[in-house]
Amino acid sequence: MHTTRLTLICHAVTPLQKQGRFPDDEVVAMDWRGSALSLAERYKKTRRLLCGPEARTRQTAGLFGDDAVIDAALRDADFGQWKGQDIGQLERDALNTWLTDATYAPHGGESVEQICLRVGEWMKILETQPGHVVAITHPFVIRAAMWHVMQFPLSMFYQIDVEPLSATELRFNNVWRLRLETHA
Image (cartoon, rainbow, N blue to C red; front, side, top):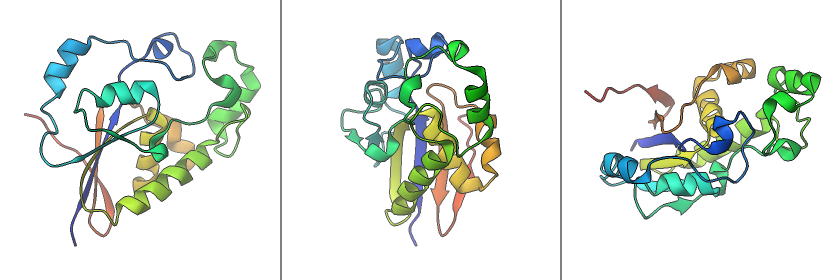
């Protein structure tokens, strides 16, 4: 059996993230020239480059190559009415319930459970496709992939921090595994 290697890279930081707002289809806020020079060679060997459809993932994918293919499964969570909203301005009870109940979607978009199921289905497809996939996506999608691999309770979903431009390495060879690597 051949191994599927999945490198999930979180998109670069956005102005809305810096402001404590829910994401919308915004662009990234970064030094493109410096970042492109430092990241362009990181995953140069044979790989498939995928990204979500949003501007921030497409722009970040450009740091790793000009051959990115948009994959709808890598799209960000649907935050419904909360898109672009300041987290501190939301109705407290709805926000607290959303943060503790994975089936709840008070914003009219996707629940955490729905996101995890969507990403899990995508990962099942990858199991049949050996090779290296570099996927530029969102914190919620990366958390969902971690949930799929580690099978921890959904209540732990928000206990995973995903930083901009961080990489999460997963491998499939009959079973998914989290792989921690050093770059020394």
